[in-house]
Length: 183
Image (cartoon, rainbow, N blue to C red):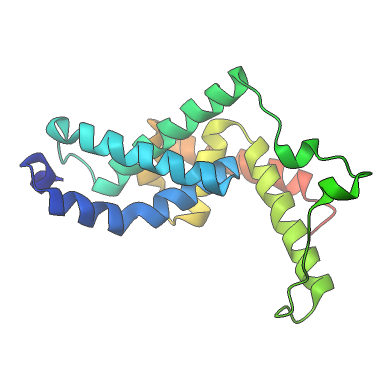
């Protein structure tokens, strides 16, 4: 970031290449839409670039990056709440064979029934995480999927370490309750 602050465009390219996948994964886990996750990740990196002159290395860079990511996700949730949209897939008429689309079987899959069950479970878990309150959802994603320490999560969320522990405990209890039939 200090090199970017000095106007080094190669440093920005390197930074994006190094952190792009993680940012996209965090956003995808929070909103569940791969295309939208890539668009929002671009917004995150535009914000990083625009904020380069104000950047101060007071914490790890990734903590600062995840804070921007978290704020971008919150903004997207607010935008979606104001402007609800229905997907084109949901609008397709199942009784019309022309609307159903073509679905080809994956010949590489060893056990289709197991694959379907696994995908359904992953989708159920993703939706359960998506229904968590914002702070709990972010804490779970950063802890479970990104491996951040409680201190780093506290910095991203702007709260204490004990608050992070409490958020994670409540999130685990909620998820345990919602996924009771699966585990």
